[in-house]
Image (tube, rainbow, N blue to C red; front, side):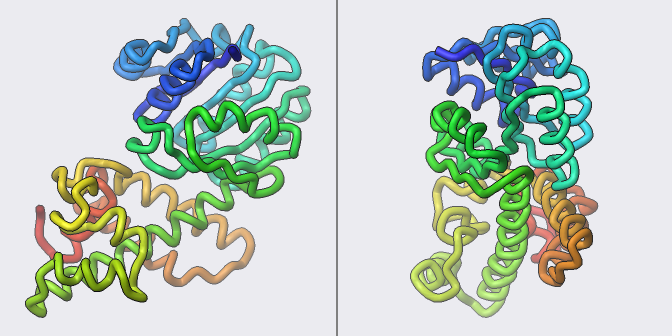
Amino acid sequence: MTNIAFIGLGNMGGPMAANLVKAGHSVRGFDLEAVSRGAAAEGGVTIGASNTEIVADADVVVTMLPAGRHVIAVLDEILGTARQGSLIIDSSTIDFDNARRAHAMAKQRGFHFLDAPVSGGTGGARAGTLTFMCGGDDAAFAAARPLLENMGKRIVHCGGAGAGQAAKICNNMILGATMIATCEAFVLGEKLGLAPQALFDVVSTSSGQSWSTTAYCPVPGPVPAAPSNNGYKPGFASALMLKDLRLSQEAASSVGATTAMGALATQIYAMHNAWGEGGADFSGIIHLIRGKEK
């Protein structure tokens, strides 16, 4: 059993913490939102009074926070009270520069640190089937892996500090652009008189195949578990996809990479969010492409 402090108990962090409890670990958590604290408590997490309180006796600290500035702020808050030499795992999706800064802050104060963003959405968080993309030294990865395996089914060591965040934003840039192309194809098929199931049967077994079609088809019917069959409830919200696409473009600009498709996908998801569907699943961008609300 490991003593774990879990900071950030929202839609992703709450179920992840609950899976650590199911695996037999002692998990104390904190979140600024009372609703999130309550849901996590129902999952067996012991709720503490503050971030600094829960980290004092923890062997491992896990953070799942909205953005880089929140990660840096929490580190500023807890590094003075956390147990010296303990492991900090940040599973937030943040910008590459702040990920590297977080590593440096932790190392300077004598802590092991791993950036370990995830893929798999809220469904994967609940089911314990997330993919973890990890950046950090070999020792930190080796120490974190057994815990990550309680929350995910694929754990990948991508490289040194910040490599996990780099992998995450590259993956989601592909996903965002692919989903747009998939939606465009299904809308075009509809206008040409193709039934969605017929197009799915072809694309899912042909050269146009992608995860956006086979696992997350944006039209109702072909993939029963997809958000399209549940009113486009996330899943993975369009606002979060826009966040990740913007991170990809910030990173591309910082290293002089040309990402024309990523840039265009960012613009289209910005339109989808401005259109009023930022809280819907990102596959709901098919409504914008159709030009009408669901």
